[in-house]
Image (tube, rainbow, N blue to C red; front, side):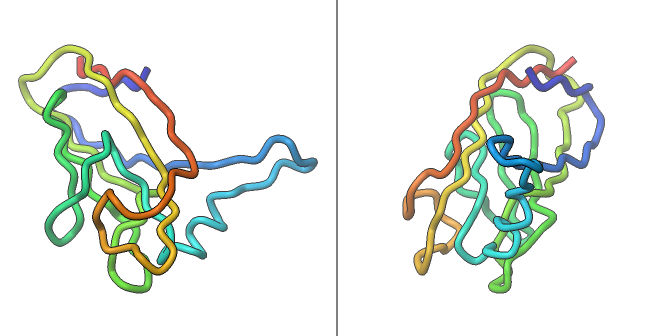
Length: 124
């Protein structure tokens, strides 16, 4: 579960680890280096605007991408979350890393899913 407080702003960082290796490997660095081929999506929603922003209707939360690839498209390892001022409750949240070599255009459809994790997002 991800808990956030209404009417607050958060910076969220995704850290990807490969714990099958010793020492543990930080995959986040590889995703950032290959940013032109990777993008995180939240609830399978393609971000809009400049800077890239996703609106999670169920929780009324805005997520702004803080990291960009060489083509000025979002990656999503670092994001700014703005919680609504009045919303309270839980809603589903899926965070998905898509691998989109040579087809990344900011939309959700192209590419294959590398990672997909489900959470509940709770606004208090």
